[in-house]
Image 1 (cartoon, rainbow, N blue to C red):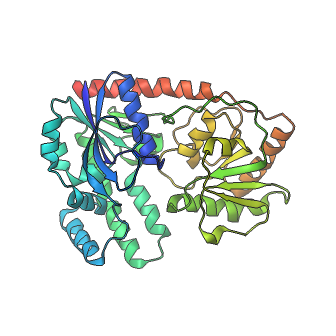
Image 2 (image 1 turned 90 degrees about the vertical axis):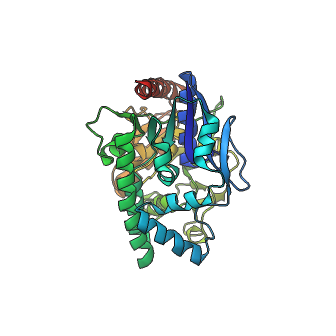
Image 3 (image 1 turned 135 degrees about the horizontal axis):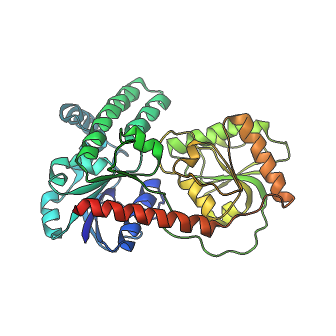
Length: 386
């Protein structure tokens, strides 16, 4: 079976959630016996990762970075007229080759896998002529609504709310036309109106590359968080952790933050160490007795949680951080609220020091999820050819 995997951006080494999700799905499709060709844009200057067969629609700096004001106005006008999300309009304008001609050159193929709404929305009439699976990495309309609530600009809030309505309509159209819809959590499946639909499959997310074998670890910090803090969604969880949780922790608790953080976060607490960009995330996390998984968004892929749990590390997590993870290792605590989070962190860190909370078998956690994602993808591929 030959499948064309349609995604806005070909995976690169930035390690974004969408990149990791795309690679996890493609790897699973290939394990099921499919030949997969990637189709999408290449980010300018990016080093592609895990893409050994691809067709590029061109190279662009970013969908929205440094966009001239006049271009932004044109995009907004087209978006409002066509009823499309703004990112879909931008991608449609950026595509250099004719998408229909590119698909013709990739023939013969048995179907498409449309990952996310951005590129799928840009060329919906072209893609929907072929049988396809729809990968809903998140409920995009919820993410847009959350972004609107965080934005201080009235104009941006209005634009994001309009985008949320367009995204919801697009996601529902794609879900209706798809042979199967793949989500990463029960919550996102319900948000798409597919909680009782037989065509929806929930994929247990796994990291594309398994962790390397490691020996004993000797943590230097009590609790740690790693992230891309320039991302607005990540900033919300870091802000919540620093403002609401850290003041409730014991004064001698040592806290490490991996990843470049905006200057406003620096020097708030002497016990909080901002380490900047870390070259080896695995080794950084292993330097922490407890991983703090303080996700606040109501949609998306549980990348940080799966990364920590595949390493077998003790963790304290909000319910949002554990979306799509229904079988928790014994050393992971799910809590609600800042008070409960702080108490759980202290208990887990003390347990690590006294050897009453140990590392778990991360490889077993990964194996179990791999078996389930492979079964779900095999089921989806069968629906594609039915």
